[in-house]
Length: 84
Image (cartoon, rainbow, N blue to C red):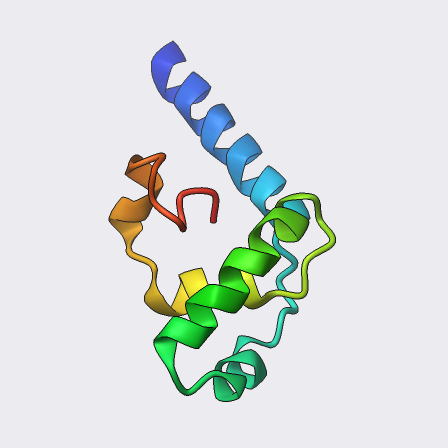
């Protein structure tokens, strides 16, 4: 029982921290329309990654990972979308 409570608390904290880093109001639909070629989208996502992690990004990194990232990306720290 204590393990379940601890796990739930950890997940809730991680979700709350994620909301602070990645604003929910990022217009990914509009950003997706700017990039018709995935390689270009990735290039701008790479530029935007560090500012996004510092809460100063434009949303390109977030939207790229939302569009092309996989759930398993969060398991491999070498993956581009790991921090998303």
